[in-house]
Image 1 (cartoon, helix red, strand yellow):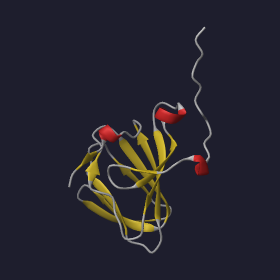
Image 2 (spheres, helix red, strand yellow):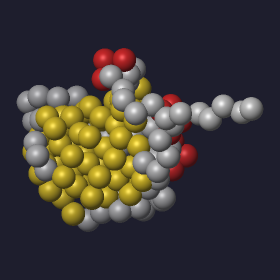
Image 3 (spheres, rainbow, N blue to C red):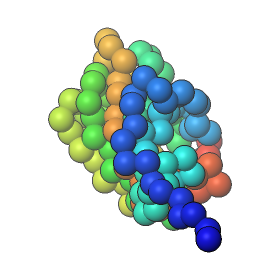
Length: 127
């Protein structure tokens, strides 16, 4: 009898190793199907150091939602530019060029929800 793979419904922040994505942000995959068994979305924390930014990029298939949890920055979203601070939430439709710059004096941290889940193959660098 085959055993069914069960999803991991809880993760611990300190147990998750960060890595750098194609766009240059430092990511902790808090919940991702490739690791945890969920299916329709991923949730990660992006960290952008003081004075740096992600590379302009787009995701042809994924919609992203960013929620700022620490720091401040500037969000470039298509032709729009907006300052972002703790508590702000931004929706990034599929295929929209975007990048975020840390313009503050502390590390910028963003919760990133992607649906479908984040994939390096769905990340196209634009610069």
